[in-house]
Image 1 (cartoon, rainbow, N blue to C red):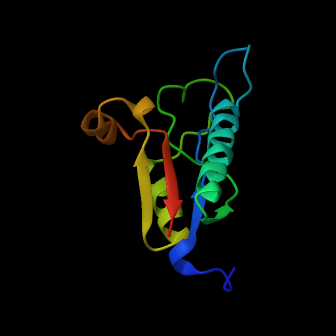
Image 2 (image 1 turned 135 degrees about the vertical axis):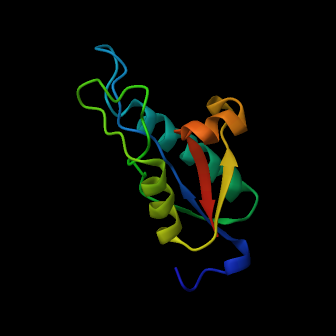
Length: 118
């Protein structure tokens, strides 16, 4: 990793909550989707000549809407943020439009973001 050119290297961190989606979907649905999106994004970045490090998925995330359902892991937003920051001091996160209105979602601890770490 140290041999990769810093100016042309990006790490992609898939992030999704472990939460109940009903009996028809697995608890890891958000993680499965985040990993697929991260792989697709990594392919696009690599096609542009960047070196891409696909990090293991971050599964600790706020899940307040499903917190009452069995199997859901509802982590405080602050814990998720600190986990990302500890992976690297300067995260760059792209807003995920599925979170809806940015201001409202940030107040409620939005669940999903796509993050690339410099």
